[in-house]
Image (cartoon, rainbow, N blue to C red; front, top):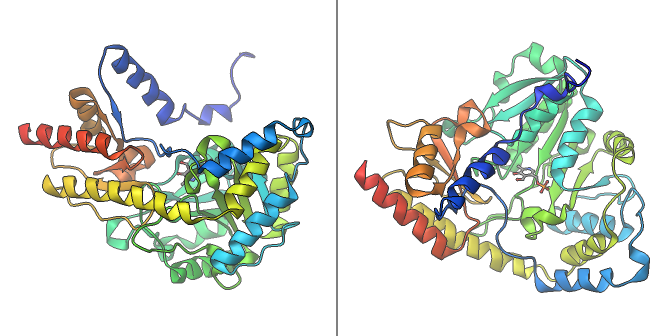
Length: 390
Ligand SMILES: Cc1ncc(COP(=O)(O)O)c(C=O)c1O
């Protein structure tokens, strides 16, 4: 009995993509050419000047030790400047910003810092998986807010029962959204902030895709809403914005008193980043940002390719304004899971079933734009031929 894991750990399962990877390795070992449009990991490298900055820094003798828990002052200032320039939001680098080893870590740990057993956590469904696993690990009770096409994938805040709102400690929002690719307006953020203030709920906004946008769209920050700083924390990251997913550079910004608790927990867990990563992240954020627009145009062309192919086979997904995903309805006669399984087995195209993100994802698949146009063309051709045979 003593060798069993904690009750807390037993609330978790190995994450979906870990299982998928072993299935795909088996197919590859059997000589199959699998096309992966499932996971949201940028396929292109960061800009050259970011790599140069890393290389310059790593050669110094004084960058290899532990760093202060708050990372580098220059990086905190870079986040502050970015929020001022992009959103006209003022952030005090000393109090309103906590650096993270990727935003996933912060999302998980913020929940541990605030949720007691039995507390409710309000979670969008479909939604990014870490909100739920973090809540369960803390002994919290997820309450799922359905996201539907009819409501533009925004939760209906009026549908949350009063007693649930009273017991809720945290509400999660995420726009541009994973997996639905929906976006939210400033006025929706204002409604959410009002709701959170009325009910004394910590409103966490996950802005992981805020700089991956198309057709001139600009994604707002929740901190632009009036009085947002009373209750809000926003999570941000260089993973998707700067093609730096493996570098693990994220941030939590917003209410300083709330952030202080996250910081206390983190001082017990990690010892900041490798200094050359901090140095290169500063360069990533302060150098000319025009390459991001060029990169977004590449994603936009891939998006258009996918949308056209899906329209040609009669699936008609929405055209996303942001994020790395197309959220597509599936043909009649399938579930999200059976459809993805059949595509993987029959034509070796890997998409993510909508239900991986929760039961309200049924009827959809998530298709990622992180593969070059040649590869996407081949995947869509395989799909079109396969659909013609069904
Ligand atoms: C909605 C959302 N939030 C957060 C993350 C985590 O990003 P990172 O930990 O790389 O900053 C992801 C990654 O896929 C995501 O999709």
